[in-house]
Image (cartoon, rainbow, N blue to C red; front, side):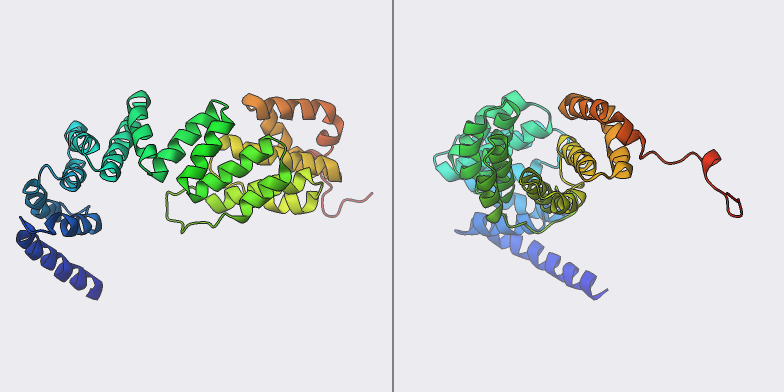
Length: 298
């Protein structure tokens, strides 16, 4: 109850202050800060709208109006404000406007339309845009281009991608050093589990060094990492470790399901299963009909 009262009082103060910000010298800056904190509140958005309209064509105001109107059914209205901001004179604010436009296009599945805005945002120093472009380059197999974009982004996820790029180039020690720079950001529901991803990369490094038991621990803790292809790769490594250490039960647990999968991991799993078919079959659970019953005599 106390928390609700505090929020109600804070909201009342915001609504009162909003009227004083219209035409004020610092109105847009203060209003943008309030909007960021109260973005989900329709009443606050409506109260702050005149602050930004009075400041047009200020680029900050254009971005803020897009943030207000992004809640409308017609997303073109918000994009229109952001596109105007992206065409403005201030390079950093233009980059921020371009990033908003790019995100809107990506949410709508319009990747081609997003590309020029992503490049503008990347050149203006928006790390998120650099990361999106890097992911695209990785999918196309352009690791050198991706590495430059990842370093420019400065984001924690980028360090994990860089470690994977090092591993694809068989640079195990360099991949290890890339991980040393990684610091997991605070996790919130819906975010990818970057810590699990890091454990998977560490497991791969240990696997390649022949430290199978330590690698197994890391792979076990990495199965919540983002990306089905990535986690399937970790499961394949667990199957390979099981075969290496002679654990038929674990090999049977991991390998047959992977052998039914599509893609590179599925092909590798089928090849591995063909090579070790008898060993893996030996780890299958015993059918109930053949299980000894309590009281049975030899």
